[in-house]
Length: 422
Image (cartoon, rainbow, N blue to C red; front, top):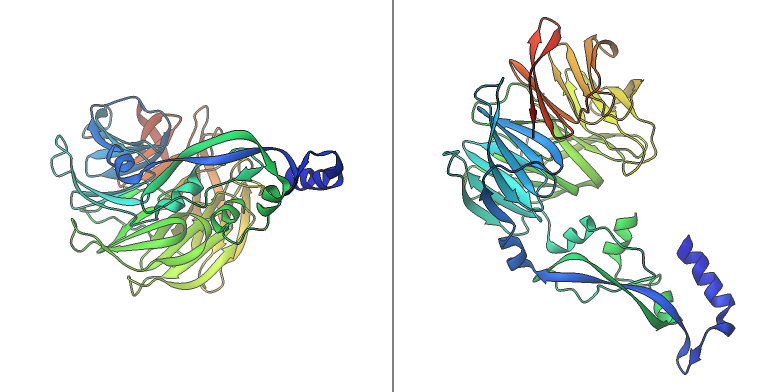
């Protein structure tokens, strides 16, 4: 709106703007990308380091006796959890541009600036890089979508060679430019990237780790599924060290999470929940979708119900925060049954008749879902920040505000086992 008004004013007052032979001129903020060679940039993004403090804790993942904590965009911390009452940090895997991981048979798969990276963790004290498949998840031009656009009147980035370079920031300068340059910004035919920016877990196999409801990575059998922005990227990992890239499946813009119940995928996005059949694991087939207002949207499933937390406000959207309980007994026609108001929910998990909700500053909430879709709140762990949760066989892992909490199940409730500052 500001630019539209500015354009109108510029035209109306053109008589007062300095002119030259090629038309009126004015001062504009011009933004140009700062680029670096992609090979050099990515090579410096990986390292195995001694433990360091967490900067911004994200998702958690568990494999055997170890917990992996994502440090948003920086890598992940490795925690020895052989003694749950006294967990211990043992390493930090520096992996810039990383948001998620998944593990099978001691091979850890992770993303880094759109590349698929494979680590060998068979010797946890000597983690090694096994493989890196460049642009396997998304290409260098998609990285531009994760770089915040500055305030400017004109953006110039059409001459970037995305095969060689990657954008790491912006430089903004005031320049005297023809009005025609400013008008061209809104009539370009090559602005797809710019315009788009506006715009039954079951019991996991012993050899496969487990993530929470915020996961973007999911290993099912010999296949790794990765959701990224708008697509499901699919990899055949029957050869663990040499993943085979298969054809992507386009879902919708702003998809965020992936969950499965058997051979059914449930994809959470800011516009809705999308259901896919993976009876043919190489080619997920669309079944249906459940649309809602714009909001962050992780999902878990148990039996005939999908549980979806919607977080509104700020970056997530304008939908009112809440827990949606959706009847999926007919996968082709998911039906909303009830909405429970929430403060600012994030991850969630299910185990037996219990439903665990990470409700942000309102803490961890525990519900009895034995009479779903009617839920009964049985406990609320307040005065903590709850972000992501993983219900394990004998304990519950929960993370929030750079703190890892572990609870043990006591009858129909939880008892705090340990608190670990990251």
